[in-house]
Image 1 (cartoon, rainbow, N blue to C red):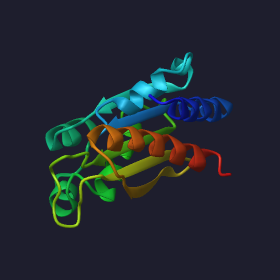
Image 2 (image 1 turned 120 degrees about the vertical axis):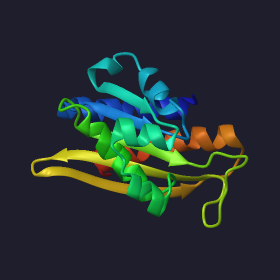
Image 3 (image 1 turned 120 degrees about the horizontal axis):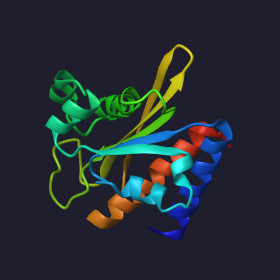
Length: 167
């Protein structure tokens, strides 16, 4: 992980700790790199609960309760799927308050019409008084597989931090 990514993970952890919140994540294209960045921070067990790597559609449905209809209508790489993944993380434990998900096409293959290599969809879910608030973002990253995955982790951390502590 780059120093900048580790700083983002540390800053996110501090923001979560201020609120006594726990974080969880669900990853597809990043394959555990997001959880790895978070757990590279000493003391992250105070604010990180768990992570899921759900690479297949079957895993997304089974572990995160992503709807078959969502996957069929929008595909695994979609904001709709990313939001359901993040909501599924929070559904796994009442102890968590915020979740991040990643699903995308890291390359070099896998592109489809309208979904180029480098396209990653992110889901963010936050526990609220009256249920869950979910949001999504999509970004297309340049570079090879490793660069797309690393940039996705940094983007996810930065966006989560901006949601929790708008600047």
